[in-house]
Length: 452
Image 1: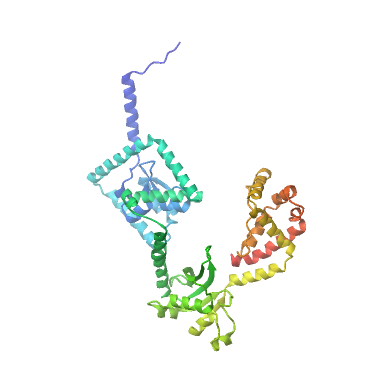
Image 2 (image 1 turned 180 degrees about the horizontal axis):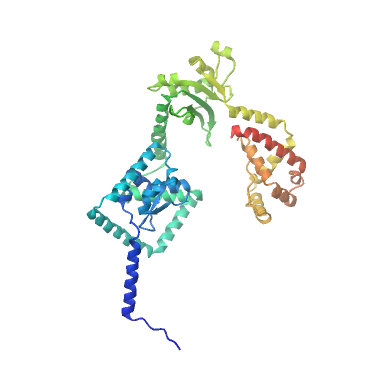
């Protein structure tokens, strides 16, 4: 009977030394992440971070955010990554392209510099970080606990799970750029967020657009709307050429002006006129103002030119035409096509339209029926289950979207109503109705392109 020979202490020691030497050789194959090297410019500090799982790897934050998955590599390949076509897709502005070139030059200079003292100091720092990571790895429960806290935050705050990757990358960036003391000292609440967004960020963007309007002809689009709380606003968009070398006009939302109780033409005219032309360079903007686009509401557009001459025109367009007699007034095509759709749909058989409304309201009113239909699809179809859309008549594209979804679910809906529906529901998707529904979908599709 063969017995396994027990290793002597000398043999075990020798084996450990060989393994240690092998690990040392493997660790020298790649360059460790160094902040002065791989975050040596403001651009690199903004887009590059160290991989928390490997001291020799980096993560490109911009590529990870754009392509929705982690992008990185070994630290010695950072320059190759910055030169690659994939990273080039994230360089959307001339400033980012220049910063990227400067970062590449920095990495090239680093390769030529041999400052042993600095490298030794950073090696000590990296060893310290590595020892901390070793301790953390011994407590894997800490990492698991963090993941549970992260997911719990998403659920409690009612945030979509698809936000998880971007949020984690944002947290890593914050942790890398700011210390605990800074984070502990700041405070964020509703009013401060509103102030930063409205009076700082939005105003800066707004001033940028105004400066571009000073060197370009422009037109404006006006439309009234309201938010969930019932407050009324006037949306003001601009259409202009961003620069002389760009022939494609740009469309930008310039402002949301709050409307009080009155929405008459004079109130809207006064608000727009004051907002656009009471500025320091208002006279320059007046010279570049060439057009106005709005819906056909009585407070916006009137085609009665005699009213303009007699100074009795009450619409916004009439008042602007008195100030700028060369102005182009355009009826918004999306509104015009929507009026065409409303008129066309009104001529369709009411029985067919009731099918769309009946199916949509049946599932939107009852979460139980919605869940029942979802389970029914899972059992009877190989395709992923889909929900019937909620029909909202005030939304232009709602009828088309609901109609297309019903036609997409024709087979499971027919089977569901035949099994669980009332006598009238069993008639919803009979051949005659389906023919009308498909024809209506085709006709709406021709106009939907201009209103979506």
